[in-house]
Image (tube, rainbow, N blue to C red; front, side, top):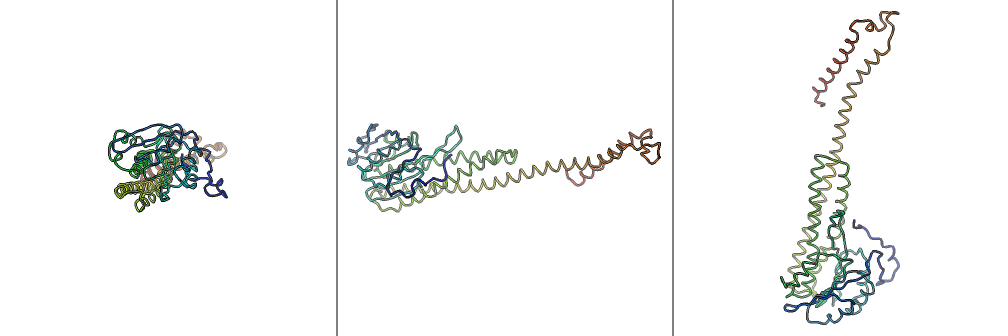
Length: 358
């Protein structure tokens, strides 16, 4: 389950730009380089970060994808590509709020890549850091597995505009891929909401409240990531940086629309969850009322029967006085007792039926 809040006690009093390692980071790195233009393409896995340095001043577009967060590797890249120490701090410190910062020669972007784990039925989150330069994009992610495989395939097969466009378009495709994957998460949760609606009406069991709480928590987390991401995309649109071409701005506007749609869906789900929680409480209350009504009817029926049985259980002797339970000496006294019981029960049932209590 993704964390809603990040503990920041370790960073209090630390000088700006100091790299504070997160205990969860994977230090072992795997670096892949995609270098391409409209006609040429090469892909290779490099063993050391120094092998990426020659691509900085090349005329082609270079995508350096780093899996795993090693502070030494990040520091070497930052020193060679001229990245500010505050950027290194944000890359290594997980749990950053999605944001965009323009440093002139490059643009730094942080966002969350989120995907769904089918085995445990939970949302898995991962911080993605992007450094956009004039002819390169550096992406740093926490671990293996991402949503960028379709982009890699398009680059390999030269499909779409990616091979003919610049580094800014590549950064756009990475952002678009991450945001589009939010729809998959919402579809999964949407299907669960439909099942929950049926269960609430037909069979309001005890686990429904827990499931509603889980989905509501996921919606809060998604909103926490999407809300600032909308500002990131809007900032890229309005940015007058030379790194972002005018043609790419049109595509960024489309990504911005996607973020708005995701936010609308999240808000709709949150409203539905609130309504479903109220319906669940009402269903449980109504079910309890039905149970209490049945028990009350049974109690109301057996109270006079218990009273009659108690009277005839006192066994006063008829030989002492004719007023001491004369029914005990009657030939049909036992039949008379059951007749009283049945008439009393029938009368009460008829009365309850007339009042429409059952």
